[in-house]
Length: 284
Image (cartoon, rainbow, N blue to C red; front, side):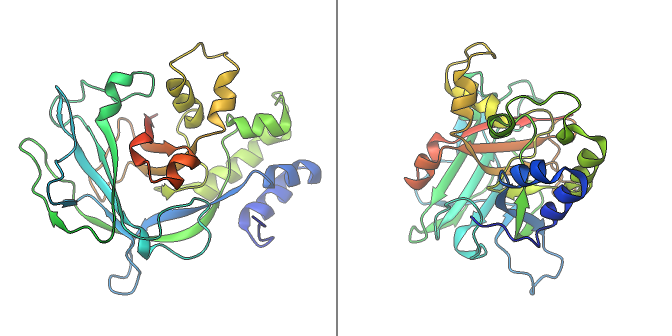
């Protein structure tokens, strides 16, 4: 995709990096859809929501994690309502994506969903409901309290890779401590640019700690040692589907101001295999 030279990340890169490094870094940027609370109800185009209760097909069971209990509904996205501009991810043209997560309401956070624990993968789900399938709004299962409903709008925004992302290492090989990408001014400018609650579809994930693609790739490979070279290659095959950050408006708190991430391989996304999406989460 051709990036607009008017993009603020282009200006930021050229203001803080040598010209050659700036251009190489710009080549790694990806478009995304940033999801934000609607500020003018009735005017902003609502594309989805955090919290509330889900609309599920008749006969579809509420997602549950065997031996642990039902998951909590986190968010839904109306694919047909999304902006027509390129979001950097091949989402369905219509239908609804619904995200569920075992958020600890039933066990006070004892059971954790982690990419390196396959037995826990059932604790996070993505359901796709085609537009022509009749649905009904469900009541939350016993013991699950629905989050407050927060309507969301979307805008296209360019995202940058975390310095631990394999695409950065593929482009720059080794990043010594004095590399320009590590400079305090550049990192501070990036932080200021992306500050604020960050819910997102597509683009680069904004990790709290290190590259989430690497975490998911290792889990998908069966948890080899962290220095296994296959992990970086596998990480390049995974893209962000959605991230849902801690959000006080929706009473959502993931650990210590953490973030939930769902990732998927492009070929599974193209085939609508949302059951193959993988999940991880990070907090401070």
